[in-house]
Amino acid sequence: MSDDVFEFLLRLGDNTLVLGHHLSEWCGKGPVLEEDIALANTALDLIGQTQMWLGLAGEVEGKSRTADDLAMLRDAWDFRCCLLVEQPNGDFGQTIMRQYLFDQWHLLALTALAQNPNNQIAAIAAKAAKEVTYHCERSAELIVGLGDGTPESHARMQSALDLLYPYIGELFETDATDSAAHFDPASLRSAYDAGLAATMAEATLTLPDSRFAHKGGRTGARHSEHLGHMLTEMQWLQRAYPGATW
Image (cartoon, rainbow, N blue to C red; front, side, top):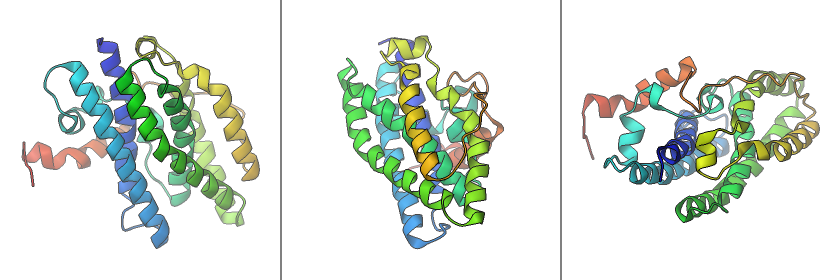
């Protein structure tokens, strides 16, 4: 496999790693016990998917780096996650909006990748899609419940949508890295927009008119300031005590 396929696998693994870590920050702090547990379980699903994507990336790279090495011993400029998953949790509404916007894309992407000519990529995608189907159903239900809820919850969800919507455009950029892995994110946009519009209409939320998109995360050209802060916390134990195990 080529270096582009290695980069492509980093994109998938870094998305789930960073989002999974952000969700884990809610553990013990959820608004109600059920949501606390659900967020932690979703985080565990995503970290499990990270193990598979980064594990395969390490095999493709051929330099004996493990999934743990790739997760814990790279600096921010080596990450290839999208800017959307880097965005901080904010309040519960912002966390759920970020989750829904990613879940909707994630499910479409995994469904497409389950047909990939690379058997290893297809197998991981098919396995992950089962979990992400549930993630997507759950986050969509919460979007509708909160958006079409009280005046305060509606206002918070609209604010979260306005804040995060400019980060979804990056998800649909197709470049040579994607092409090397036989993946075309741009082809997913129409289905994504249709699903997004239906959910937001049911939630009585208004989609922004602008299609402006922040870019740079997937290529590593420009990450947000939030990623470095998150990695400092996530990696500190392995950095301070190299090779530590328990």
